[in-house]
Amino acid sequence: MPKLVIRTGTSQASAEPALSASELTLEGFIDAANYLEFERSLERAYAEGHRFLILDMSDVHYINSTGISALIRFFELYAARGGTMCLANVAKPVGLSMHLLGVTSFLPFLKDLEAARAYVAEFAAGKVTPSKPPLPEALGEEIEAETEAGQAPGGVRRVPLRRRRIPGLENAKVMVITPATNRFTRVLRLRMSTLNGHYHLVHDIHEALQRYEDVSPDLVVVDERSDPKGEFVNRVKIQKERSLTSIIKLYSKEKDLRSELDFKIWENDFLIEPFEVLELFSLTEAELVRVPKDRKVFQQQVHFEFRTSPENLEKANKLSDLILRQSVPLQDDATALYAAVKEGIDNAFVHGNKRQTDKTIDVNFLVDRKKITVIIEDEGEGFDYEYYLSRLDDEEAFEKAKRRILDEGVRGGLGILLMYKCSDRLEYSGSGSTLRLEKNI
Image 1 (tube, rainbow, N blue to C red):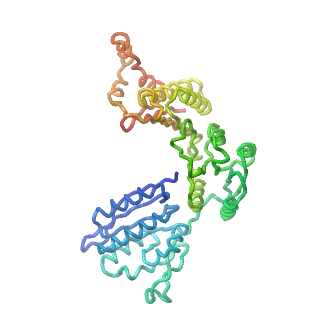
Image 2 (cartoon, rainbow, N blue to C red):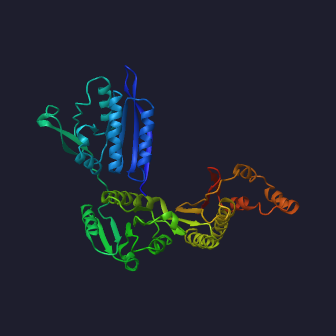
Image 3 (spheres, rainbow, N blue to C red):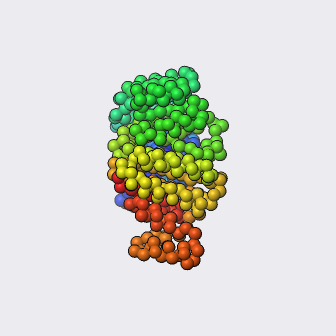
């Protein structure tokens, strides 16, 4: 699902009296999946007691109606406190929906953070009031917002919206796999034409796989009805030269991903119906921007998840071996890292999830030009990993472990030491349920 990242800060609104404004920098999507996180961030900022709030929307790709309602509600709360809330750096696709609803008639939109801070300072000094919103210069593109007579010449206020220019999409190649041509696919084709990209529509995964090399897509949008078993995603992601292709999968609203998950190689992102078409457009554009950046750093990325069953454990080990054989040039290094990865997955299976089939194990392979990173996460309670890690540098670590096996009848006890010896970096995080292994290549 689309992500939302929120960073907090403060700025000085006035020197006399001493006032400060809360600032939230938002990145990603404000939608059904992320709305509660967005609302909580607004609540935390309001609870700090400041009279002013500035939202930097420069990297917001989409906001739904529920998110807009939160903006309205908190604007009123800050107004009741004798302050104000304003938005900065709003892109046109995001601001247009708010404008059509009438939000731009009362909520201040500023062209950038500097202008927003200046507006708040003037508000604190009593130079502007909520009944007279700002009249900033436009940035990139402006729209007209109707206001009450006297607020601006001709009763019209210019609202600055940032035209989002997305470099590098002129030659973007998108493949859409859906059962039939319909209004939805025609809208997608029209959208791609505005980006000057290349759009390819196919109706089944077999045709898509046959045409894949000729098209060489940067992004594939897959309707779940065309790929119910994930065959297309699996075939693309397990091959090193294809794995960096971004895949967005569209699921029907009846689909419960978690309850039906058994062994799944994950796509890069997904949407579940019903969703707004603008949300899909924003997500595809964000992915098309990300892919070229990732290709400069990574050579392969594979993310899979499985329920804790013996059959799935075998699949996970085979898939891990396949990935490593493709990515690690020296056979001995591949063999050593495979031993470490297999040990990590086995530990997650036995000690983390304790063989409970309702729990899952998440494995992520990231291959760049210098190293391969494997992250293994289980749903267990964790363990005191610092105790075991502290013994790894002991020159007699193996001999001591050996004596515990022989003298005390301990079963195992060599797993962490084995992973340590077979990798260049071993690290646990959190409670110990997340393991990170690295091997230089």
